[in-house]
Structures are given as structure tokens and as C-alpha cells.
Length: 254
Image (tube, rainbow, N blue to C red; front, side, top):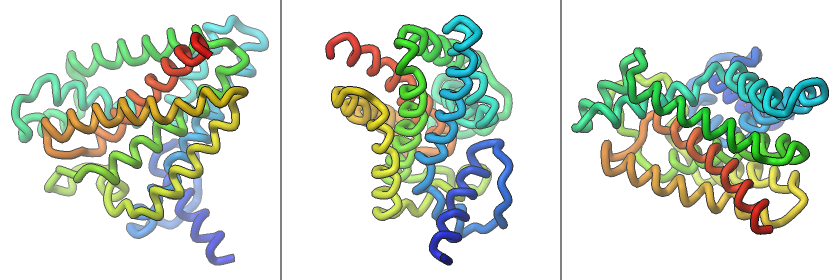
């Protein structure tokens, strides 16, 4: 029974940190450091909310409107947490030439031109890709995209070093100490979403996303030597979009 309570506390901590969903769990630094294993399950819940909004809206509204509302729902549920990180990375990497300058710009709460342009194209590609996917598999695609993209962020935590030397990042407590067991739990829970699809061709999704993650990781390592919390949000957003594009390719050739 204690084990179940402990695991619920870890999941609730991840839910509290990455969403606006109200949960009651005592603050604990230890829980923050160990809740990484449940990031994909948080994504599964966020994607499920988006899928539910799409399904309900599509009953009375055009599909394009339903897709847009599903995107709005996931942004509201997460408080644009990952989108904000992506915008910060666009500003930092676009406007900074040295590691110190990149990190300094990324800490600025203001959004610059690079961030606005990046978000415009990211959300635009996300919307158009989802709109081109058949309505019957959009719910599964949303759940898989949100779940597997968070697994990619966990894998980045495991593979790269955290580079901020200060404690200024609000993401630092949950971006350290990723152990092999936690990574394994994250992988197993995330891959369960593949059973939502009707064809095993969709098992290619995590591999395509993994390739894109490696390129993004290499970019981070070359520019700043590792990752920050904003970088994790960028990994999540980019690989989520890659998932939707990969679904379109799989549908075309399967």
C-alpha cells in the first residue's frame, strides 16, 4: 500500500509541475527529483484531454475548428509550459552567439522576434498536419504525440548534462538524477500508446521522433554544451510536431 501511495505522489508531483490540473500533494524536493518517470503519463493525460475535446467538438463543428480547439485545450491544461520553453530557445539560440549570451537571453521573460516567428510556424505546422490526418485517428495521434514527445524529453535528460550553474531555472529540480530504472519505466509506459493504432506501421513513430531528438540534442550540445529546462520544452514541441508529420507519411505509404 505504501508503494502505491509513493507512486501516486510521484505522478501527482509531475502533474502539478507540468500542468494546471489541481492536485493535492505535499512539496518534496525528493519527489521532484524522482517524478521524471511519469512525464509520459502526464503527456498521455494531456493528449487524452485534447483528444476528448476534438471528439466532442467534431460532433457539432467542422473538423478544422475541432482541431484548433483541441490545441487550445492542451495549451490551457499545460499553461503553455513547453511552448514557452520553445519560444525562449528560439530567442536565445537565434540572438546569442556565445553560451553565456544564449543562456542570458533564454532567462529573459520577454518574447522576442525569433520566439514569435518560431511559435507561429510551430503552431501552424502542428495545425495543418493534424488537419490533414483522418478524423478517426486524430484522437490516437494526439495522445501518442503528447506521450511520446515527453518520453523524448526524458531521454534528453538522461543523455545530456544540465548546463545552468545557478538555481534560477524553475525546471532544474526535475531535470537531474534520471536513473536507468526511471528511464525504463518512462519508455514502457510511453510505448503503450502504440496499441491505439490499427497498424503496426505506426510503431515507426518513436524511431522517427528519436532521430529528430538526436539532431536537436546535438544542436544543444554544440551550442551550449547540454540542456536547460527550456531545451526540454523544445524537444517536446519539436518531436510532437514530428510525430504528426510521421503519421501523415505512414498513412501515405502503408
